[in-house]
Image (tube, rainbow, N blue to C red; front, side, top):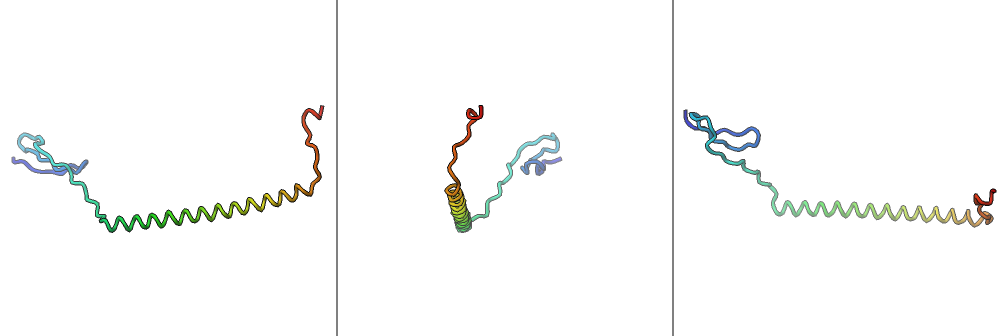
Length: 97
C-alpha cells in the first residue's frame, strides 16, 4: 500500500498516512478562510455603524428631553398643590406619647 491523504473531520487538516505502517507521516494545517472584506467594504460598514450610533444617540437625547419636561410638569403640579394646602406641623412619634 502507498501513502494517501485524508482530511481530518474534526479540524479539517490534511493528513498524510502511510498505508503499510498505518501511521500519520505528515500533515498540513487547515487553511484559514480569508475574509472577503475589502477596505471599501469595511469603510462602508463603519459609516453604517456610525449612522446607527448617531441615530441611537439622537433617540436617547429626545427621550431624555421628553422625560425632563414630564418631570418639570409634575414638579409644577406638586408645587401648586403644596402652596394651596395649609402648613401643618408634622406629627412625630415622640408627640404621640
